[in-house]
Amino acid sequence: MTAAKKPKFSRILLKLSGESLGDTNGTGISPEAVQHMAEQICEVRELGVEVVVVSGGGNIFRGLSGSERGIERATGDYMGMLATVINSLALQDALEKLGAPTRVQSAIAMSQVAEPFIRRRAVRHLEKGRVVIFGGGTGNPYFSTDTAAALRANEIGAEVILKATKVDGIYDSDPKKNPKAVRFEKISYIDALQRQLKVMDSTAFSLCMDNKMPIIVFDFFKPHNLKRVVLGEKIGTLVN
Image (cartoon, rainbow, N blue to C red; front, side, top):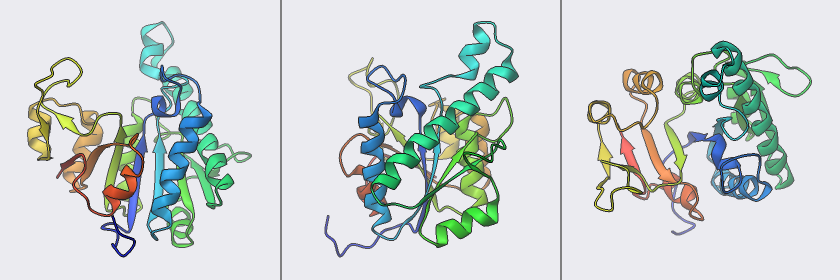
């Protein structure tokens, strides 16, 4: 990994799960986890890469599990969307402390803490070197933050979705349960769907497939891995 290497991508969308911002159980907000994420994002920003972030909200509230416990589904989903805004503000705080200018845009209007999502404004922020964090999902119930990531990546012209996980790619079965699980270096959208590999939910995945948006699933928790992916190293699994 040399300084002379040029980034493979100039504009990326980084999809973070809410759990990745949480403690060891994936709940609450861990300042250490948020700091680690901010450092990795700053590393790629210093390469001149334009970065957009979409975060989940599962560390605070997950709409689907709320509906299983009796909360009306749409209400639960709105609660989950508000959780993603909380995560966005935590990440914004960590990035700004490291000197990275940021903007949070929310799909749900809340003008005192975030800008509304306006595509042209988001693109302008990126061109000015700001990290743009999208909160509030798509603004609609019944859509996951994976779908929000797929939608925003296409809207703002990202070249790739980088899906940050705790495993080093996509396997043919759960590597935690099956020690013989095989990792794919590359897989087609159709293969991933037919094998039900749960890369993303089907709505998000279809959106990526229809618009030929590549997805790289990689281990975000290894130091400098985000930078290595952006520089084109074969890390994780490429879905295209």
